[in-house]
Amino acid sequence: MNHAQSLPESEDDAILFAFAPLHKRAMGTAVGIVLALAVFVMTVVPLLRDDHQVSLELLAAYFHGYTVSWPGALIGAAWAGFTGFVLGWFLAFSSNFLLAIRLLTLRARAEYAQTRTFMDHI
Image (tube, rainbow, N blue to C red):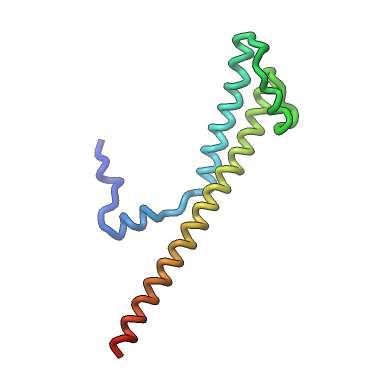
C-alpha cells in the first residue's frame, strides 16, 4: 500500500492540509455513532448477564423513555446518537471558527508587517 499518494506534495499543500477545516457533518456522525454504541452496549451487557446491580437509571433523566431494558437500549442509543451528533457538529464548528479567527489574525499581522517595512523604505 502506497501512503505517499495521500501526503501533500509541496509546502503550500502541507500548510493547506494542516489548516483544513473539519467537516461538521462527518464529525457529528462519528461522535453520534460512538455514543449510540456506547449507550447500547452499556445497557445490553447487564441485561445479558442478568445483573440488576447496575445503576443506569440516571440516563432516564437525560434521555426520555430510557429504561434498562431491550427497548430502552434502542431508545437510549437513539437519544445518544442525536446528542452525539449535535455535540460533534458543535465541536467541529467551534474548532473551524477558532481556526478562522487565528488565520485572520495571522494574515492581518503579516500584512501590517509588510506595509510597515514598505513605509520605512519610502
